[in-house]
Image (cartoon, rainbow, N blue to C red; front, side, top):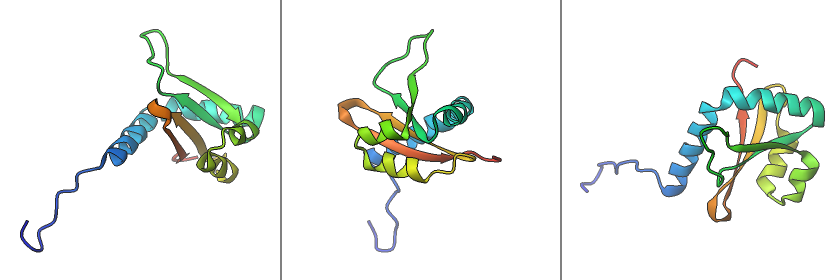
Length: 114
């Protein structure tokens, strides 16, 4: 490649996975946000946890449940515990995605206009 020419910005596998996660979360934000709000009101701080290894059928949604801060701490996922302790429940929620091969991704999402 000639000097000064930029390399194409091709995402790594991790970046591609993160972009896929964020696209899925964005597509499902309108469903996830009310669940997170209602669960926070009932149980306090916590996170929505989704098992992405379960393939939904046409009549089922993906498996998503809300776990309290105390239960999230038992998972021993440092990012999840930190984010649950720090998010602003009036405008944010935390989600944990369990993936194949034992991988886990955690996101703190802001909800516009909240």
